[in-house]
Amino acid sequence: MTATKPFIPILDLKPEVDELRGEIMAAIGRVLDRTDFIMGEDVHLFEQEVAAYLGVKHAIGVNSGTDALVIALRALGIGPGDEVITTPFTFFATAESISMVGARPVFVDIELDTLNMDVNGIEAAITERTKAIMPVHLYGRPVDMDRVMLLAQERGLKVVEDCAQSFGARWNGRQTGTIGHLGAYSFFPSKNLGAYGDGGLIATDDDTLADTARMLRVHGSRKKYHNETVGYNSRLDTLQAAILRVKLPHMERSNEHRCAVAKRYNEGFADFPGLVTPEAVEGHSFHQYTVRVLNGRRDELQQALAEQGIGTMVYYPIPQDQLPIYKGQYPSYPHSEQAAQEVLSLPMGHKLSESDQSEVIRAVRTFFDI
Ligand SMILES: *Cc1c(COP(=O)(O)O)cnc(C)c1O
View 1: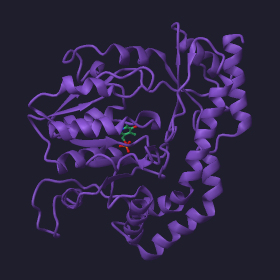
View 2 (view 1 turned 90 degrees about the vertical axis):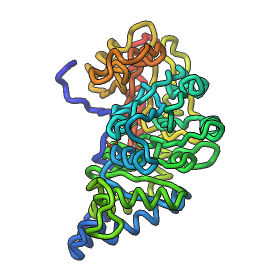
View 3 (view 1 turned 30 degrees about the vertical axis):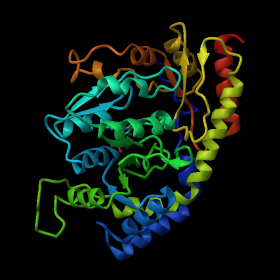
């Protein structure tokens, strides 16, 4: 890696901060005036507004996307002895949440063209211990939820959608995270809807699951000092909720910009042999724009772009089953291993300018000598 500071980082949060600074400072000021820092007015209003945006009955703010996954699993009563089916090609928090509640992640290999869990492989992974399926809408590309839900219904399984990367993405017009029994979202700053710190959310249409999740997020108590179970201290900060309320109305426009960027990249790279571009399917929220670089040239391309000050990332270099924590416990997943060698995420963001994007396309073109 070169030490040059990228002039086109993979993600630049500053333009948005600058655009919304006035509104955000005012929102923060109102929280300071009220001093309702924990479970304050903005948390309740944000939960209502985000539920309306997603088209779901209950939205429950929590401390992070990881906590949203953990609490969703706990709300379903999943724990030791249980198995949850998911993808090996994701961020660790997906599998970690399953391990955290004492259950075992069971991996199903991905399809190379979507980089999502191959839904055709789920059936064979089901055992009598299987309790749930946890699809991940990786990079914002929606998983085929019709097939997942049909299988779940047939086999009596629950579905927790990991929507950390898919806020605003839609499957057949429906928001991801509102199709399964529960959806878990992250507001980590780099996500499509990012807070200015940690934050997360659980979405569900089920009154009982919502009630249990609300109980779990405050130390397992429905009534203060009447703790029923070991829960979590996992609330969404009022300050973060206030910031998210400023950003939520911009979501649709932001995701539209991301899709436009993706389409422009796809056009720019259309004639490149050795590069597989992501399909800009309907409903994709393009959290990341991730290509596959063939012929073992991924690291070389990353290096060449870095030398020109263009930031890229490999999401993710190690499939989950190969991590030190799980190594040796699973069979191999060849597509995930191949993807880990080939993927490269290019600069993306809802404020990425056309000129910066042209620069990226030009640099990739130069590398392939086209
Ligand atoms: C970011 C992310 C998470 C975890 O969210 P945090 O808010 O960072 O805890 C979970 N799953 C996936 C796929 C993610 O990208």
